[in-house]
Amino acid sequence: MGEEGVRVGTEIESTLGLWKGAHTDLNASLWDEDMMTADLSNGGKIFKQDILARTFGRNDAVSRVVNSFQTWRHLIDEISNVIDQLRKQRWDDDLEDIEDDESLESRQNLLSKEDPQMLHNRLDSSLEKAFQELHTKLTALVEQYKDSEYNGKISMYILRILRDIRAELPTNPSLQKFGLSLIPSLHEKLASTVSEKPVSTLAKSLKKKKVAGRALWEGSPELPVQPSPATFKFLRILSTSMADAGADLWSPIAIKVLKEHLCSQIGEQWSNILKEKENGNGDNPSTSDTPETESAEAKETEENVPSVEADAEKRNDLLKQSLFDIYLLQQALQSENAEDVLKKLGDEVESELKLEASPRKRIVHGATEYWKRSSLLFALLA
Image 1 (tube, rainbow, N blue to C red):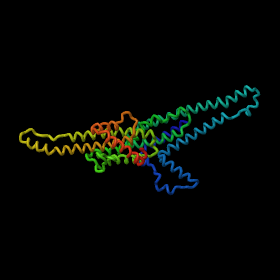
Image 2 (tube, helix red, strand yellow):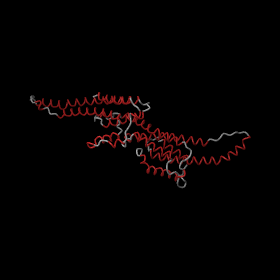
Image 3 (cartoon, rainbow, N blue to C red):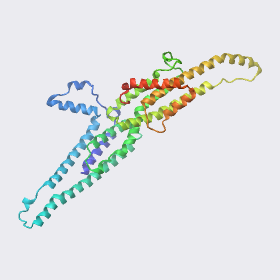
Image 4 (cartoon, rainbow, N blue to C red):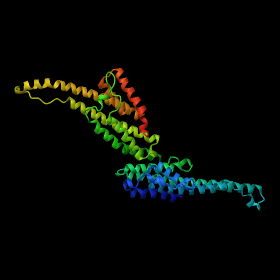
């Protein structure tokens, strides 16, 4: 029994040992041209299997492990069926030479209850040991490849394996926690891998000092009614990255981990960028105290007054657009984390803007309504 579990672990280990980036974890799309030529005979059995495999990310690497596990699972089922048959078997016909009724009852009890129960207990203990060894093997492999350049893809691969194995676990209560302790760290790595490109792209765009689309503001006073191009691009790249990883990976727990990770990353980076801009606007050019430059300084100061006022207005516009974007992202990345960095960032921007109740309400309402209208564009995230 343990040998079959070892084969499953060995298959995983050999796949990781020969990992070749995208070639190992290549997932075929449902919309590939080869689906048009799929065999539809026998009720389309092969076609249906192919659709399920592509939907659940069962590429060749995952399928080899799943097939090995299913072979083991069938063996477990066969042994369980034999034990169940022993329980149902009537031994009276084989014991006609025994005339003592008590002896007959005792023998029937031994062969139909005690022996099957002993075999069942032995099967349970063997399975518990085998699955514990497989869990230990997986834990060691996750630790071994945690610093690999392919760690993100490897985490997705192991998540899929754990999902498919757990879906077909034997009913033994002692086995129901198999693999659960590995999932949080794998979800964290999945979140960091998928969010790396969107977050870095957003961070670069946020360093711009001008508000794109300022002419599209509405109302009196004029306020933003849609997100900045940088924020919309962030959401689009994020949803694309999630889809590229595989829709099958995004369970409610995985999405929750991703949103918490994004709130933390975006909140910290955005806050730092706004502080850098504030410090940059607040820097005064160095001046000399020599008498020769006093008149020039006075003239320069007078000329710089409109420039300072323009800079203050630009920063004010930037903060208003940032506040709209932050409220929108709060809608998109709703997090139950008590230390929501994105929410704290919104409070900081509000505090600096000192908006009255009416303009603030308009921005909040505008961001909320925009997310309601556009959320289906980012379906996996929504």
